[in-house]
Length: 361
Image (cartoon, rainbow, N blue to C red):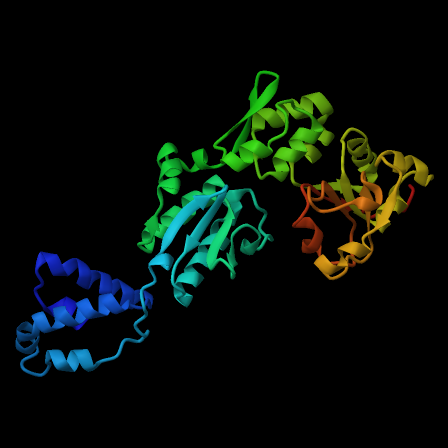
C-alpha cells in the first residue's frame, strides 16, 4: 500500500498494482504467478523505493514481508466464473470467507426480488454443492442479474451463456421480474428463463393455473388479479393470487369453496382445521377429493417430524414430493415450525381464529 501511494509506476504496471491493492483490501490471496510478478515489480522499482523512503526501505525488506493470506496455486479449472447450464446458474471461485460473506449478504438482501418471501433461506434457491465445488441454483432472471453484478464487482469472468441473457434485457429493474399479464382471455408472462417457460401451465386463466404461476414465483399483475376476482369473486381471487393468504375462521366456507374449485394433488393441513368444517367429515372430504387421508409419518426423515398435520393426496398412499405440495393450511398455535412445510408449498393459507368463534360455529 505504501508503494501504491508513493511510487510512480508505468502505465503497464499500474493496473497490476491496483489489482494487488484491491486483493489486499478484500482479503483475497494472490496466486503463485501473481506473486512472482509482484516480486519482479518490487525489484524493478527498487531505486524509487529506496529514494522515496529516504533510504529506510529496500526491495529486500518489502519482499521479506509475508502476505496476510498465503499464496495459493492457480487452478485453471477453478478460475472465478459465472455461467448457465441446464437452466441453472453456476458460480465458482477460490474459497475466501469474505467473498462468501459478500455473496450470502447479497442473496439475503435481494431474495425478495425472486418472488421469495422473507423467511426463505438463501440456500433454498442458491446453494453450495460440495461435490461439484460450485454454487448453483435455478436461473431466475433477477438472480442472473444480481449474480452478474456480483461477478463484475469481484472481477470474476462471465460466460457468454450469461452475457447473452443480460444483454437481451433492457436493464430496468421491472424488466428482470417475470410478470403474468392479461393477454386477451388468457395470459402471457414476460421475462422468462427457459426452465420457467417449460414449467408454465396452459394459457388459460383458472384457479389452478394461477396457483401454479404463483408457485413458480411469477408476479400476478394488477389487471390479471382483477380478471381473476371478476371471474371467481373477490375472496377466491385474493386467495388464488397470493402465495401466502390469511382466512378468518368465519370465512372458512370460502376456503372450502376454493378447494372445491381447484384440482390439488397434495394438500397438507393442520388437524385442528377439521374442527372448523361442517358437522360431517364426509362433506369436508368431498372438497378435497379423493377421500383418502394419509399420515405424514413418511415425511419425518425429510423434515424431522411434522407433528399434527395430515396430507390429502390424490395419489392416496403413493404420494411423493416430486411435484411439490399444492397447498398447506395452518391453524393458530401450530405445534410444528412454520418453515418446514411452507418452504415446499405452492400456496400457504393461515386460518386465523376470530375471538368469538368456536369450532363448528
